[in-house]
Image (tube, rainbow, N blue to C red; front, side, top):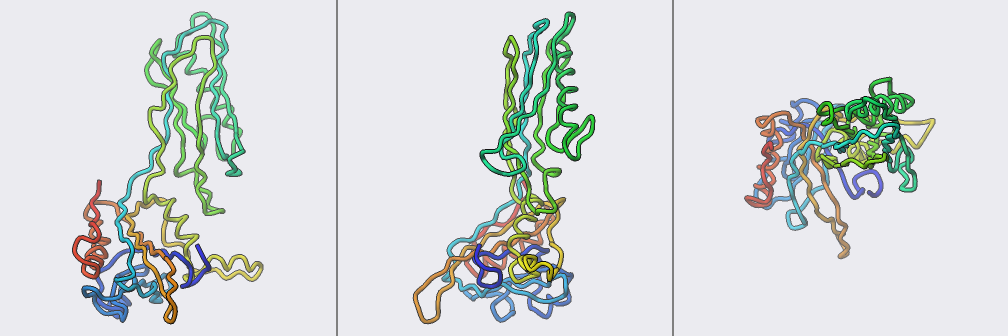
Length: 322
């Protein structure tokens, strides 16, 4: 990532794209408004060097590096994609009287984030005469909830890590384990999202069917991802690295991003080169703009339009809500 400041390898700007045609016009906009302009702060033109300008939370106009068109390596739009939680279903349960049913949830990298750290949680139910598959599923759900009730932020029926539910009834009942890898898994103090990788299995006399009915996906442009990126890529803008100066910490503006928003992202890869030497340093610029509806994408599409004017038509695709 490099050192904090303009010399760091990657910078990130989060805010609301605007159609201000000059720096003076940007000054009258709301805080966190951002716009792409020519390097002198005037309207963009084809082939011109450009900068991203933003009015920050303190009302100051900040800007990115000056980026020469010939130094741009790649520009792409990254549309938002919702996160998907992993779901495992245990179905086809046979009733074996006096048999112990043990559901095991093996969680990788829990807490410490070390690949060597595995956390095992289990739920139990012993089948009795007159039970059905539904009885077993109900018993396993109750046992799993009791086990996870010991975790921080959990209670007798709900926990931050997994959801346990039932589908079907009678002999067709199945146990559904849903991982909660988003939302409640965000560590606000550490500014990181702890995503648990887990596997589910069951031990019993007659092995049922265990199916991953939904594969996990962290999504693209989720509020948690953008908060992580903004926190670590603030650079000279309210630089969070200054917190290492305890007890003389300097607290800058709060993060612009928030966990409840969805974001479209533009990534620009380019390089700097020395004035008197041939060294080239690759760098990156990330622009994240929140959206809620298809029409709200028009804000970031103003940045797309300006970049296409500078770099050439079709260099980057406009955002469309999926």
